[in-house]
Length: 234
Image (cartoon, rainbow, N blue to C red; front, top):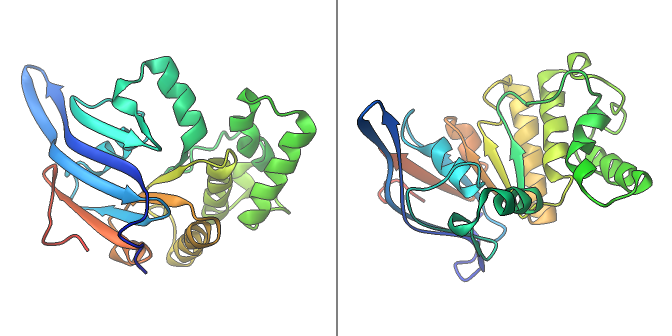
């Protein structure tokens, strides 16, 4: 499935540069990268280890800072934001899904999902309604009192996805969301992400090494040594 080419862009990246330093040596990661992601698209970022996939994801999500270029997400050039404004922007626009779930083991599924709402103005009853809805979307409404250790890997990732969508973010960024799962659980997570994209029109940007996972996306974007490979992108 492909999104229409005239869809409104939710991500516009132009002339993006990012490097890291190892002692006195500059290590370039992204070089003059340009990318547009239409609203409601599901894209997979692919490429060998060290190609810059996670760096690009982190830059789009506002958890890393570019050395040059512009990153406009949901109408805001986030390269111009200070740390405080960037943190506020992230809380409104970005939902994170990580390979290893990043759930707090001392909190129940309900409490892990509720965490992003604790900084909001919602009352306790309103927060409960939101959390129960999010857990129902991921099919875990009967596991809200379970701790992560009482859940399978696939169920933990579902809780993480519920946490990612609880604030109704503009974009869901997922870094190897199936990388720690067996084939059956991975397929279930990808089906869930497909549903979020198709039913709720969520824009999803997913880093993956798995070609089968990438086939779930509308479009595959290939990075090689920090440069988009136009011959492979489709």
